[in-house]
Amino acid sequence: MGGVSKKKKSKKALSKIFHISTWKLILVLILLIFLGATFLRFDHIKMSELREAVLAADEKEDNEKILASLNELRNFTLKHIIFNILEENGRRSVIFGTGPFYLENLYIHDAKEAIAKQQAEIEEKGITDQNPNGNIFAKVAKICDDRARTYGWPYYDRRYLDCYTNELAKYPSSASLTTELEAVLPNTENYRYDIASPIWYPCLSGAVILIAAILAFWIVCRIIFWVISTIALFILNH
Image (tube, rainbow, N blue to C red; front, side, top):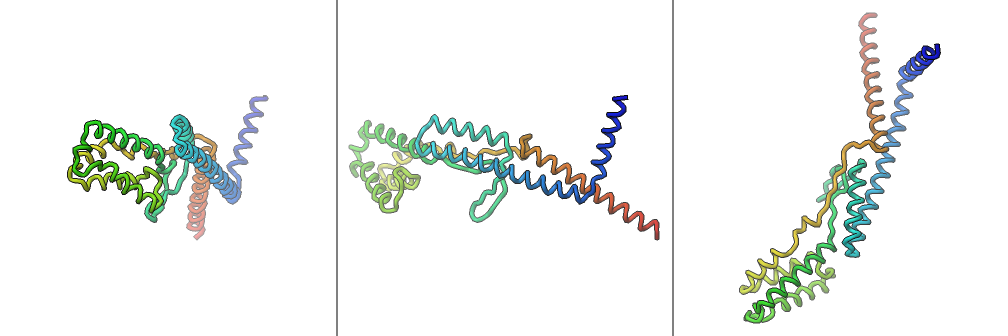
């Protein structure tokens, strides 16, 4: 008897759910869309905070902190829906993920070490002593240092590195040195990150979005059924 009573109650509850007015379902859908958008916003804010933590660690040139912050950002992004709007060259596009960001200070630090190492190796071979232009590295450094002070470039900014290689290339006897220097400079792509997030994931925002999608599909089906029924009754009565 108890089992039969429970089944009747379940069927009655389901019947009430399926007979809810469409306008009430639409109100529920609006609420779910608002909640989903709110949760997506929270996830985006959290991702932005984690990304800023990576950039802050980069400014301090703390390699351990950079690695730890990157791992935390990556783990969060891969387990949440990160809806983002990317603006490039005046055009906006929708992406899922962090969007591109760069570890500029880490690159500058590594580039500085590469240049210093290359210069030391070249000077050790006595190449600069044999050069008719004298110590071309010192001359190039002075030119680029002056430009950096004039234009406000941070020391070993990417523009400084470009200035260094361009000025060095002006000396005919240094063509091979310029090629060697460019070869030892780190690849900028190794310092660029763009972590993608899944389009859907079973997190809080994902669950709300899924329920909203199912409800929207149900509402559309009910509207289609109502339209078809209304047209059929009109035809039958005329």
